[in-house]
Image 1 (cartoon, rainbow, N blue to C red):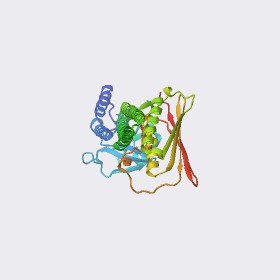
Image 2: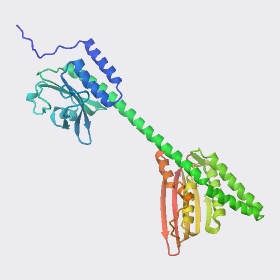
Image 3: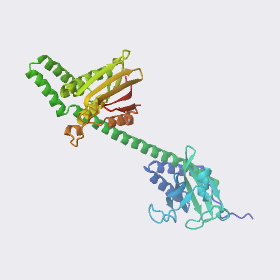
Image 4: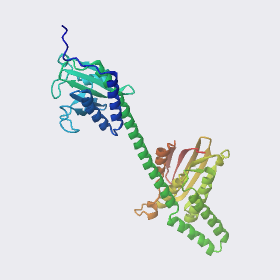
Length: 398
């Protein structure tokens, strides 16, 4: 008479097998965090597969360790708490070995396997299944049973399918979190960029600048220099219209930008008189109408430079801007010279505190738009005068 093996498990029918997988799939699908997925997985391995113990690990690649993230059985006496969570080095124990090999294992008798690590108590059967994303092991499903020869190849097939479902869900959650994080960072950068543009607009429209420009125009009117007054008033009004027109624009045509810079420098010259001199040059072969650059960048650079020169009381300050462009890039050279004598002052006018830092604009454009912006700065200090230049390379955004 044939004796039945009391440890031999009854195989599931195809319908039962399919029903379990459908249940796991639906259950995992409704989870919204990785912790939820892992706890749901551990719980259902107990309730649906009749196991007595299930622990789910995730790999910490920085520490090369397996961390217990969810458990049902003796390791989980209270809801979502793991009693004395174990940390296993990759390559150690059965779980650590599977984490390295990526190949599932069934151990019919752990007492004969030197790799077995006793956690809370010894159990004689163990099944360990890797959780993989794109062939990379990210975690482990590890189940044990007090009876020898408990786990079967069918258990391996079920758990392998469940591990694949779990991996897909974890990857989706990670991707969603990554997208959300990138969107939040992008919104934050856009908000910072908008604040910079608003600050640049306020800086260019600051009452100090407007008052001085209008005051100079008024002087020409009262001095019967009506032609000069009308010319400067025309320049001033065009400058204001330019600011308002391009306030919400991300790019500006280089022809308009050069015209605006000439107007801006004209008013600064009117404002500061002989303290500054300026010159703008454009290469003959450069078609300004076929070039576009990020808006509010160049004026901020010139504004920073001029205001710093006035603040430090440089003498004979001369600034020159040279433009050259092709279909891909715009090359701008800003050069300056001034007498070496400067003034040391601790007083900072209020309007200067409102100036936009040009470096902040460049940093935000690189971060938000991924613009390739290059700059090279050279400075020469002599006995009686100092000079320097900046070569700025911007993308042609036409």
